[in-house]
Image 1 (cartoon, rainbow, N blue to C red):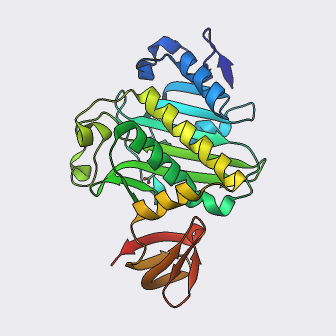
Image 2 (spheres, rainbow, N blue to C red):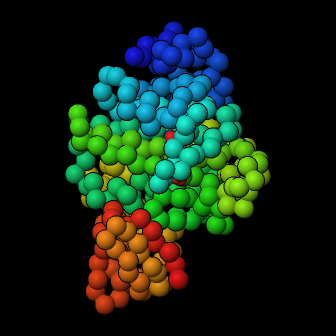
Length: 276
Ligand code: BTN
């Protein structure tokens, strides 16, 4: 059950004792201003900010009433990554958000590639970094992960997409097990970032990508995808439930990857794509 608080930002009942002003994430914007900008510029009507939750994916799924919204939590006590892994968020430093979209999307088969590409474009725009995309949805800088994306899609009780995004924004250190494999926008650039602006950039990019898919005008985004995945013309190994194939990549778009010899595989079925 969600209620609007005094400044119009929705806080989950279980977090009621905390005022919206306790939510320290706002940087130059308070949550109400951010929500208003999101509503004006994107399809996201509501912003739910909480100080702590299990996972923003769960809060996004259970929030009523229906509609497009964004959940932002400072802390996640059971943050989830792909393949049952956990996800570590540093409160006050990182960004843990879920973008919920409750609309019919005709281009479902293109989302696995289009959404990470849109988020990559947003983070590059904020930071001027050149990021790499590691299939399916790790965004990296010099081989170190800066952002992870978890996409949960369902059709019951209604069409729903939960795009969970964890960005290492301003943190300057990681637990020992992540030290060699992770980075943050701040570590990569030497600058601090306003997390509200990063959130706004991501929401705008996802909104724009869905619009361009619907209008059939996603050529630039596809080109960015091919470039940042960096596998065209190179030898790769593809892995998925029913797929284990190797070869040189001849063609790539948001739906398929084609290997030399003519074999084509739907990207949505691929769990791994490694350069050889
Ligand atoms: C991965 O790289 O394995 C995906 C990580 C996704 C993490 C985000 S943080 C916000 C949202 N809530 C979660 O529990 N997970 C996603």
